[in-house]
Image 1 (tube, rainbow over the protein chains, first blue to last red):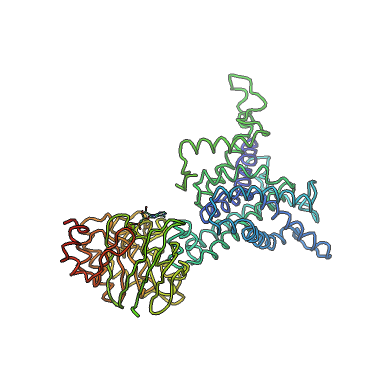
Image 2: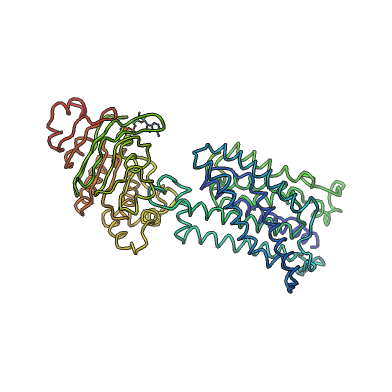
Length: 330
Length: 234
Ligand SMILES: Nc1ncnc2c1ncn2[C@@H]1O[C@H](COP(=O)(O)OP(=O)(O)O)[C@@H](O)[C@H]1O
Ligand SMILES: [Mg+2]
């Protein structure tokens, strides 16, 4: 039983956690692709910037002598999301919109976003250095141990992980309601479907573009911040995120928000299952096994985790380029 | 000045000129039909009216307002609607949502006009919650026209509304166009099925090589042997 709980912790809960991060990032990517027709390479670094906003705001609160029973970063997460949303609109205004207005090819805008990515990485290092930071600087992380019936081992979840799971759940439902019930949300789907007809129908494309960056930037901030809270905040946070969130976007179907969510969890669970040590689950049956049980049986060594989304991405591109939810083909 | 008046319109795509000094005028409540061979510039003319083509010369006025080079998203609020030849629906939106998007520029309650659209196109009523891309060709065309009607247009531009439809659906769409026109909507329609379309036209415009070839009442054009020989397939 303890082995099974170990599996739940290491594979299922971990998959849910990293899957949530990927889903939150991929939703933004897929919306940006659907509305603006380009792959936003700098999205991972918007996540990093968002996390730094959360930490910086918390630092300011703390310096002002503000203290609270809940960690400051959890309080500043919401204003940091708003700040990142505004920051994303600013990036669009300064770097992407001028190119769109000039009628540039999408590939040119993708190149610009690579430039923005490099620039953001530099800017973050100028302001924050290269060190690793602890988001929970004002108090320790709460750790919840949920007893599992019949096992000596508990299910273990940390405070930021719990917040992340709840946040993702709420965000997905809110996004669904926004896209299917609100006027602006429907207009977003309309622009993604047929931008010219949306224009002809009098839909204000500018509002739709802003809404896209608000959602994309806000969720990127949440994902970056909550991931940094779970581990640490590093300036190269985006390095291990960019490939999985692109894989999630493409696997789910480019331009399909529900696909991005499904793709995010698919990549997340695949990663954790691939690096899970299956030997642990076999240990109780050790005596009856016809062979010596190795101490570690994992599909992929942990250090090669990043190959998992890469392999899934290649399989999808070869066998089902539209992704799960029939998105656009690159 | 006429309700709609296009004078010496010249324009095209980028540096390429397609339209050469085209003239077209129509009175309120009329049906204007544009016919002509493939590639004559009929679609380009409608697009030019809607600010979607680079206009290099001439003017377009509607009820004395100059709308030449007005950005495409400003037409809906002026109650001018356009149904393009292709890609004229939002395929992943439901029928109802397509109509709602047609009414995007409205801030008032448009439920009455939506009911009116369902009255004009009864097959759509049962499919209102179905995704538009899954409908048959004829029904998709109804969604496209229905979307345009949501602003209760003064002027409705239709680009080949019967393209690809079976003869049965074709006359159905023509009937609907006449019904819409009877409610006071001025219509400019491009049509491949020239004979049927000219039969319902107040004025017909034959376009060839991006210029006016003939302009007359629909009846006279149908009776004109020269037009019949060159443009109506004998
Ligand atoms: N988007 C475009 N870019 C460049 N040329 C175009 C475009 N659309 C149409 N054309 C050209 O303009 C001419 C007129 O086309 P069009 O107006 O679609 O003709 P029609 O509707 O009368 O069949 C054709 O020669 C066509 O190749
Ligand atoms: Mg045409």
